[in-house]
Amino acid sequence: VDSQEGVSYELGSNTMLDGLDEALDGLSAGEETTFEGTLEAGEHEGQKATVKVKVNSVKAEELPELNDEFASEASDTLDELKADIRKAAAQDAEGRQATEARDAFIAKLQEGLEIPVPKGVKANMVEEQLKGMTPDPEKATKEQKAQAEETVEKDLRDQMVLDALAEKL
Image 1 (tube, rainbow, N blue to C red):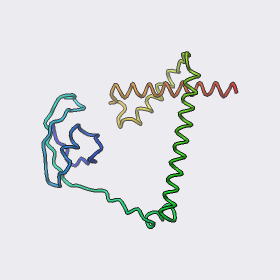
Image 2: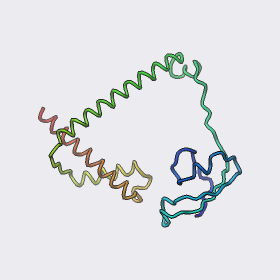
Image 3: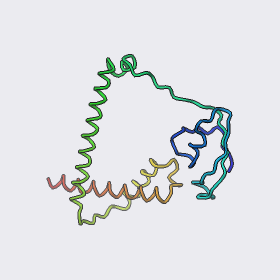
Image 4: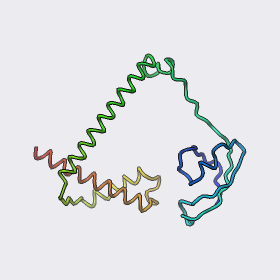
């Protein structure tokens, strides 16, 4: 496997190669290691490979201390910031409950119905969905394409049911 110099990687993201996090954990700048991993893309996808990585630099995010000075950017005091966060979390929870109730209601309305979706609209929406899932929609995996189609079909059916209900009411 050819190495890629200058690639940034955030430890704990598990986004590049299986086993990379464990191999990099604890290494310092200038150190290198070798580990076995399964390739996840390319012509050798699914095959085991020996991967050698070198750490060029290590950067750590330093979080500010949680105090009134920090809180003053968003609120007056730390207690007020905590109260604001609690209020926002409660509103998020209420929003999730409303969405779940709406989804359950729509699912009940759709029981036993076959709702065909317009192919042209579906194709355009699938393309847009794939753009949000992968940098290059042309190289999307079968799983990504299937997920995009499933999401788009559900969204279209839900919207048609809601439109019909709104029209009726």
